[in-house]
Image (cartoon, rainbow over all chains, first blue to last red; front, side, top):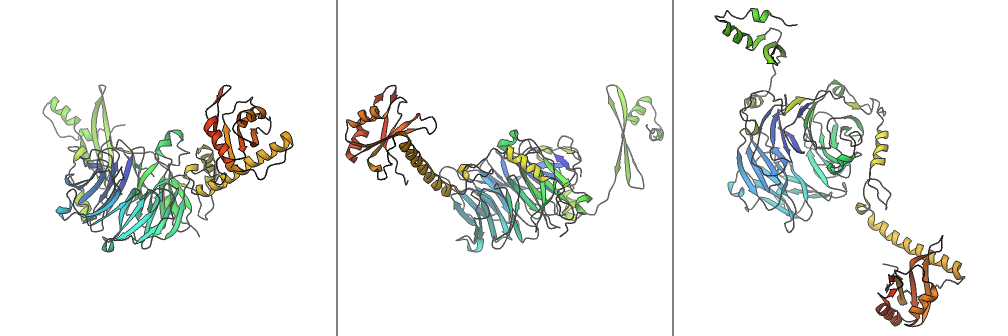
Length: 327
Length: 263
């Protein structure tokens, strides 16, 4: 297992994402330049330069035509994925923390941070409608919250969204009936929800939290199905597209990294069995906590982004593909 | 170590200069088994090196869209860069072994327990409420519950203290029906101030029913605070008004109401 190590960012990674075919990997970091790379050989194709602050999230449409980035410079930008031109910019009063496209790629969701008198908000806009892409326009969906909405995504087609909060609450809204939240789960996590990802099959959500656990939730009612315990805060978790495995990444706080040795920091990525909630393998790589990870659509490769500024594309060898979990 | 056949098969050249040029050019050979050999020459510190790189050419079938994307032109920070991974941004990292912590039968093979142990000792978080090591007391989910317990405990301890002392110091029976509402708490008490002296100062205000100086259980030294109970609440209020902030030896007394025990 010789991983590719990509050093295109000067600061901690905030998101790695594969496109639908998995031939490209999109990365964003706390520096100002989100990048796109070929997964195969780790060649950097380009960077999307226009942001003036940390980029907290990046997502790409199903057809790899457009990207969306959410940044600490109070903007969300839509990009031409191939050429790196900025197509649209949405300004706000506070930093944007999370963004994502809907299944069709026509709607974009983003969350804004709470700051002084500005509440945290979650908005959905239609990128086809230019009147919605200007500042202060009326979005399709908008909700305000008193706690910071850390992460949000489309969980079902273009209709349902799921939001993870810093308090540990997870909420689900149906955009067709968005007066009230459809489902809520406040018991599963005690601390901040760091990441939410949909399983490749679209049946489950996996949440990662600073309370050192990751949970598998039913995407329809947010019921907790399984919970995976780690010894360190979990920053990201992803589900294998081909096997009943999940992978967890995390580690000690960035603040305390200097006080922990690499071995004590638990910077490894851990692979758990989805059903038995048991860790069976782990692999090392990063010098700091893993902030984000994504499973390649083919199932035999994982991309991880760490606090150390590196992206690692880890292809699995036969050891893993031959591994059978007996039960 | 070098195979000079490639150079010998180079086409005829007219002049010596051209020959050097020819020799320094990169030559590419492709064989039927799919290997591609690139021969290049580099000069470093006046020494000429021949660099032979062998590639295995793999033809892959990919979706059309993926093939299209292989033709993307570099942009942004990579604008104008040559095709192929750039050494500054991409390298192949060291071999990483996947460590299996369980074997096929699900038995623990890697000692993860050990890690947990060290993690425990290095973790600086400790909760004094639930004694857990995974969060601080302020973040304790059971904080409210424990806080009530703690206050009740503290009150009990204080009671016990007083009772024990009351019996030991002067054999006096504990005054079960002492009234908290007529009691003022005196803090910042000088060490060498004893009960008679205290009675003298506070007795000027009104009739005192009880004076209690807190002492250490073991060495019987005053802890620096006392409780003075008056017969009437008005006297206690006056004591607080008049005796608060008066100088006593080298200390400034602080006189206030006792905190209600059920808060």
